[in-house]
Image (cartoon, rainbow, N blue to C red; front, side):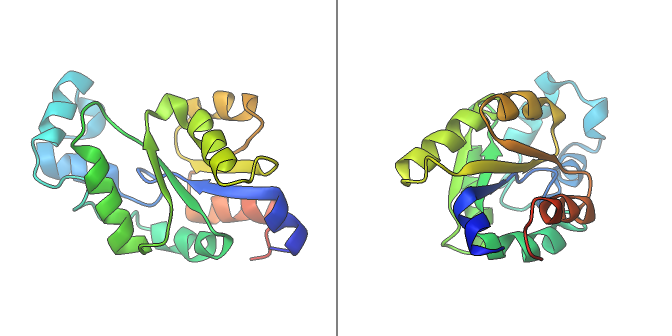
Length: 170
């Protein structure tokens, strides 16, 4: 990324469905597809699975995206289910797989824009435009309403192309 772009943008990357293979983890924990499960039965089953998030594997092309993203000082911005059990597992996964120096922000998915803007403010970067790579389309509207740029993640190749379109030199 050119010097002017690095001063203009801050890259945020979601975990589940972008870097981490959440759906395979759900199948392993429950024996069913996530789409077959009601949230009232899925979340307790996941919460009862020892180290569920910490043991998740990479998405098939997750490492490809990370190889590109890591060069742009990314911040992990990941949603949490109810309860306190998931956050330490997600942080452990990030430290082991991405490195101990990668910032990790956790919170309710519906608050991602607010969490990112607060992080930018706290880190003295209030003028940067936040870019989020996320696989959940419902995050797009509140993210863009807060002044951010949303990249709907369907594949690593597609997200990388979107970054190139914004001027990231890859």
